[in-house]
Image 1 (cartoon, one colour):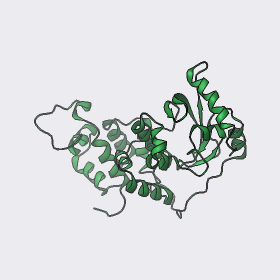
Image 2 (cartoon, helix red, strand yellow; image 1 turned 135 degrees about the horizontal axis):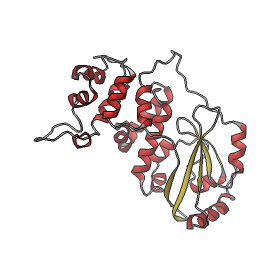
Image 3 (cartoon, one colour; image 1 turned 180 degrees about the vertical axis):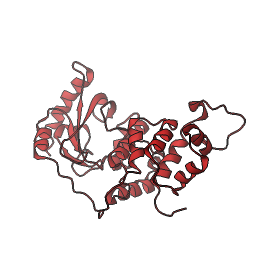
Image 4 (tube, one colour; image 1 turned 30 degrees about the horizontal axis):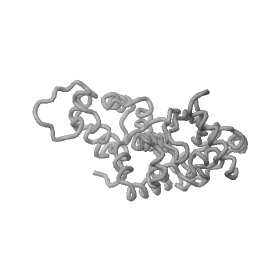
Length: 276
């Protein structure tokens, strides 16, 4: 078995352990000693040999066809985002010197963030906060330029306390991070972040090991704000054209709702913070 990193094998193994026999219609007889599906069960359902599937998980075959991966992905019940991630793990990538990429927010986007009358910030491909406005800082002081959403949610108890469904929020953050970095697991910044958080946060280690992949998309987000109490906001995540997966994040409330009134209060609090 190769000592080289094996992201394909790690992904297949993690996702296999999350699919139960009931999920795929396999009857369970007696006690099972493995979590999820056995390798031979995945192979059978995907229409490939058990030996070949074993080689994929062990990293002894790193160039399966798209047809084989799609068959396995269907057995593992991957959604479109997960399937795209799986195929990306074996895609040919040009060889280049790895270095941390500097992310620069377009000037027009910076102007828009500052002028928006709603909490807004720009999130980079590593989930760094690259720009934010006073309303975002009033929502959470951790939404400052130079912050990182992964570090904030997993390492800062005050930030985590803002999310009543904290584990669900953390899991969604990791899934979005995986989708953002794709197969670039050897990126120096990715290695730095994953290493730091794996050491410091048991929750991060457990959720990272699941290999969940999900889009960075809009959602309804419940908050527990330290001054305003319960606050339920809509969150939009909009990709910024011409950038490497930078995202504009905007929070807004339904018109006439209790949250809309609280956002108005938040605006008065934000007016006291310096523009960023």
